[in-house]
Length: 544
Ligand SMILES: NC(=O)C1=CN([C@@H]2O[C@H](COP(=O)(O)OP(=O)(O)OC[C@H]3O[C@@H](n4cnc5c(N)ncnc54)[C@H](O)[C@@H]3O)[C@@H](O)[C@H]2O)[C@@H](O)CC1
Ligand SMILES: [K+]
Image (cartoon, rainbow, N blue to C red; front, side, top):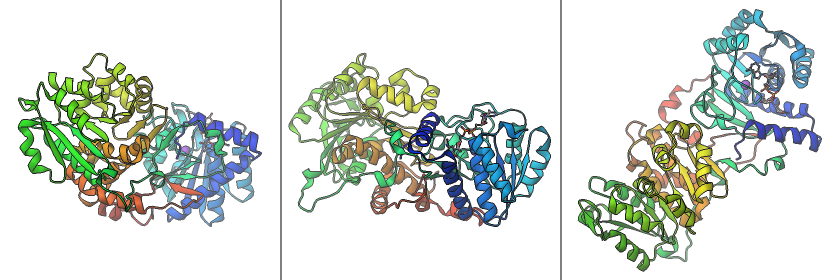
């Protein structure tokens, strides 16, 4: 599904209203009606308080208030404005409708905050409709105090569109904001719903189809990866091992033999027909004993790393072998000879995934951007934040706060695919598409998980084509991590556990089907991934 910024959403809203003839009040009705349905399904409650702002987010809140009233709930509405004159036309209209249905509304400027606090204390649930996509920081005065009241006293919070006080277009926190149990957004998710730390305050995110004309968003090439949209590798009955590719892994050095081994095992688990690992000769016996199905190719070594002749030998190996893609860099170390190996590898006309020390070596070559630009076959770089910092000279902070732009700029400049790994992983393509993955968890912040990814990606870029291979590979890797976290725990899980969970992750992706509904969760696999601890913590109040 697409992932939007507030301006893009406003553009689609405005054009839908102007050019399709659907009135804005109908969009608001669609938004509020389905949102109230979600609220009634997800929560057991009698008393709700709706805290509404003066804009259209508040208008949505008033529609929700009406449907909750019709459902027999006790509903109190507080509008954070000192006068009705400041309300947006659709907000005011829905306020009047709500009142004609017998609803109770308090205009809450400076002086009714005590009343609001008492109502919030007594309520089972607060609907936060203060600010939506029209929010501009900072929050001040009585609105700030209203948010403090919600944060202090609310037993449950539903955010309409976004927790009020969060800025839609960034994962960064700009000031005080509400903290929601669930967030119900409209048409498409926005950046704050998926990027840390903001997304932690959204709770589970639901997306409601409000009848926006999608043709106005054709140009947007920013997506959240969805399991139903991913292509999976398939086997043909009439086939042989060469039908499924031969991945060449290049890496390893003394003390870091585990990295290419994990990469090789992951490649086999994700469906590579054959896997070979080119390694420093003196470490060869380690690979011979650790790898059974995968082959190792010893090359010249010196002091536990690649030797002087390794570069030429690797060139020959590739010339004479029938490889279909290369993953390079895992545990390779950085020295004069590995630098030469990297210089050689990027000249080879074959799709390549460059990871870890492959990136660190590359960053030391003066003209590395030029060399990348010159490459005809696809190049994939899989940097974590530190490696991206080495490639770009940007600080970690700059990268974390602008993952999409940093990855996109690098792709544009070099013609490479970038898989920028962090608490969220962002994929960017040379054509300017960006994919966000919401899969994976903090348990994967442990040594070796990147090596696992390099094996999966090296395999799937051949099996599925580069773009689809990266999308499926990144999601699969995160899903294996989420399954491991569910069954083991986030502290104890290790990179090798991820390899063990690749089969189950592939099965889950293969069996998952989605149906069209007026609303859906941003994470449809969540029910499959809840650990025993989460299941126990789910009290009957938030029932799903
Ligand atoms: N037709 C549409 O455009 C639709 C809009 N929808 C809703 O409308 C929302 C966007 O509505 P709006 O553009 O009216 O904006 P919002 O309702 O998000 O917020 C804007 C209001 O808050 C005020 N405001 C913004 N930042 C402030 C601050 N820091 N301190 C004090 N006041 C502040 C603005 O002056 C304005 O009154 C969406 O989030 C969504 O909930 C939905 O009803 C679906 C259809
Ligand atoms: K809100």
